[in-house]
Image (tube, rainbow, N blue to C red; front, side, top):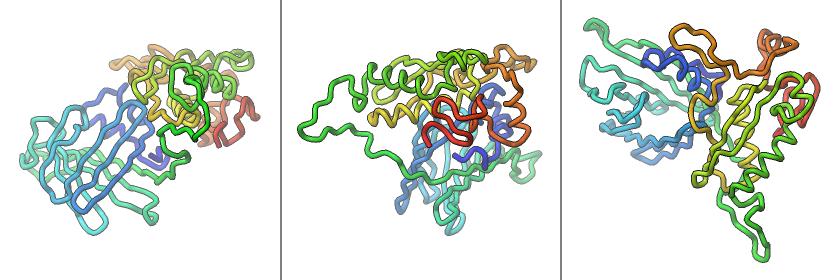
Length: 314
């Protein structure tokens, strides 16, 4: 998902009763979708660093159960609005019915643009107010852009005559992941606190392997990062998946891991700040200038594989 071009999901999530802490995580999560359409259905595989879900949309308007916006499964129906747009109306509450005039609905209208290069999702929470017609309580636009995969099949295949040990980077084992993480620490010095220059400005962050769950790698983020934790996870995932094609996903054990700042839900006071100190004020200056600090990092010039306006992978 193009987070910069999309609206914040915060108002929608608050209308749905999601806590501010969880909403802060969800709003900044990277989202990918794989969409397959047949004559009568659309299948959407939705993946984030924290979860994966599959939506089976029946285009004839018939009722079906879909993963609920706030958990569980709820009733939903999908229909064509015109030749270019499809609309899904889904009950917010698990006990809700689509034909209930007082039901709260989560409505998503999907349409392609830029000759199919982009997908626009218009999302809204709608409800009836004092017996009136259904009205939007909160809305948001989300934009997703088509991505051509940069690597081949995730299946590990060896050419005839080639030998590959268990610890080779093309085979998914705990040892190969540990070796890849070691190389990542060496190449992306601005991320991690294991280098004197980074440690000197308060960066103590590290990424370690927790365990493997089939083709999924679960990692733990610890310490203070200058970059957003979401950025650290995204770059770690890209690095590992390029080194080890068998990896299907790199994720974290819980949602709280990706929060840069922990706040008290009632008072909003900071409980824990996991960011490295902004000693020179560069981070705030870049934000003020409308520049994402993570595109440059803590050092003004290229360092540890980073370039101004680039990344170690571009």
